[in-house]
Length: 359
Length: 279
Picture 1 (cartoon, chains in turn blue, green):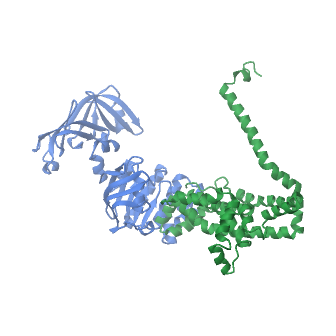
Picture 2 (cartoon, one colour; picture 1 turned 90 degrees about the vertical axis):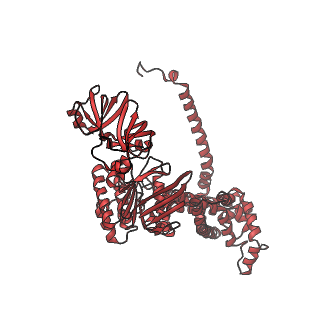
Picture 3 (cartoon, rainbow over the protein chains, first blue to last red; picture 1 turned 90 degrees about the horizontal axis):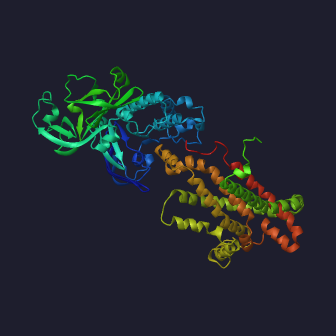
């Protein structure tokens, strides 16, 4: 378990401040944040490489302030592997291994065994990362800290290694904290997502919640929520309006039926935001497009004209101009082609009230 | 020349012309400087190298002097490595108040004239001094002995070792050490298993430079121990006592011997792919 409470640390002029979150025992945490936000410094502070200057840091229930790295039972994998250049691949993996068998087993599981005969200098970036992961696992740490460990791996191997690390994490009951830039990876791996910016935690919680309910427009935009609208929150009343089917749980928990006015758009949703200025966030993948008006349960329906079609392989992003407001929808390229969605065409956009997040 | 090719001289832009002139001036200045450095040594070895080599077999005093020089320089270097390595590591790795002052103090012996260094050492290690008299009390004579030579050599050449060793340690990425610590090693074990192997070339290079400087030392040694004579003192002694003819072979031998550390340093220079880049 990793518990941080108001943790502070300093490296040169950069400071981590008031960092608080918990990764429960045996869970997988992911740290996401822009470059220079302090992700690596955070891992180094947990590992004891960078001294903490404030707050509390508990690892597996033990306060580790002043405890040297070698007594924290923490494994650390840097982004570039940092293999010891004066040692062979085998010697690197065996460096801190609890036994020869543990080293061989870690190498086999990660797929680094075939590299044993190779010189460390002859390894590619991805292979170095494999050896570095195997080296950390061979020491059988209780907590594993990974700083973008899969970034240099090719996509196929990345999937395999990610799966194997996840499997080892489950088998050994290890607590893992991984830095990643890859939001898909964060969603796939993480039980807890920690969003870091300028040395502070902006938000943390289950990735699903962080991604769907960002705490601020900045977080929403950073996490790739394309549709962030500034506007005014109007409470419609505590009773379930006729457009909310049945009596959904959010209403029972004190949320209100809300009308959100953003320019010419009237967006209906349910939330606990106070009346007044605010932001509505709708993820692009929640927006449905149709060339014809259609009947559905989606409360929010708009007619607009396609302003831009951007295809990125199997995914297509379509910007719809709704009375001067851009609404972005993400759909498969195949759907976009089948529906003949092209710039200039009139289109109907819809999304459910529950797909709107107010912050 | 093609009829379409414009005459070079006429079309060359003024910036290009200025560059060419600067290159020529730099080449001439560099060549003259190289000649200045190389010519005296070449002349010395050329005119007296063969006689010097011959003297190695016939001149017992020269042989003894060479042996004494090698032994005392090696002893000074060993002491410098033992005392200077922790200091170099401290300067490379730790930030503390007064670090800049400490670094300046260590470099001081390089900057002061070496006879002055000898005089300063004499004040501390001479018979009248506390240390010198205490050493005499236990039968250790510093002034006018091999110990004095070692002390003088150590004083003037150890700063070179500390400086180069500090650079060697600083070149090792601290994250390697961090990884070693997370793999269960204490700071001392990481030093032995990671830092030392990664900086060993630099440390050996630093020791070789120190040794070479110790061998060449004259100013401080001559103040502290004119006798027994190391090669530099012997060369000076022959010059003042017998003239240039007698001094030349000794000086030539010393110049030839300087090739040894040069060769070692050359061999230590990492070749292609041998450097410890981030892996």
